[in-house]
Image (cartoon, rainbow, N blue to C red; front, side):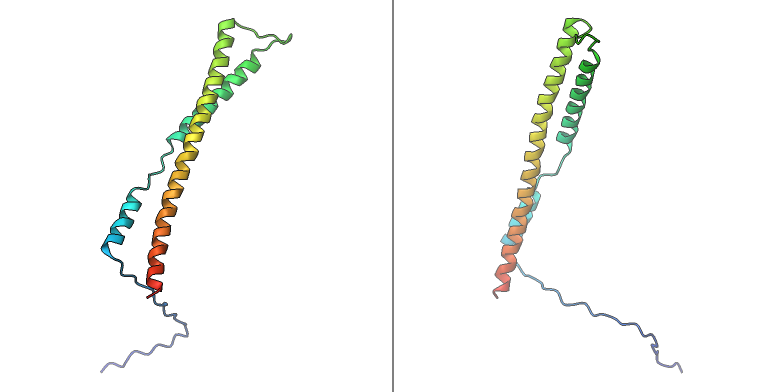
Length: 130
């Protein structure tokens, strides 16, 4: 016949601590699901666009710096210098605009996530009082 198993290991085993389980009403669960679904997905379009705009602006500024001659006058046709100034100014303005759009987008995502966390904490407090 077989002998019973004998464990000779000196290992210590921890028993996991019990977890709380919350039974929440279906309307609260549906509200929470709706809040999570409404959180916008973070898109990096604004970051890409303002990065390209600032890159164009910096390149145009270096072109202006490089077009100066020894006597501190611009070289090249007047329309070209004017166009480079317009490109530098316009791309800087668009870069700043898209930077502002990106910051607003980040804040709306942060506010949405905070709203969901606040709702979950409100539900937890309702069960702590029971």
